[in-house]
Image (cartoon, rainbow, N blue to C red):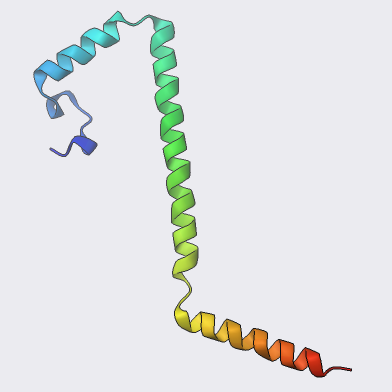
Length: 86
């Protein structure tokens, strides 16, 4: 089992699961709520970072070196045409 995909009791060694249950039971309701909120915030932050990266990479994936050449040609042509206008 990939540790990144573990989510159920059977995915963990019994000693680890027992330690987690003991730690969870020792928390007050307020501590449990704080822990849940912290985890939720971390998940939301990671999701935002992932989607931002995906958007940036996706945008840049649309361009190739040929697009850069045509962009430079367009700028040079616009400059040349503009400089001849009286």
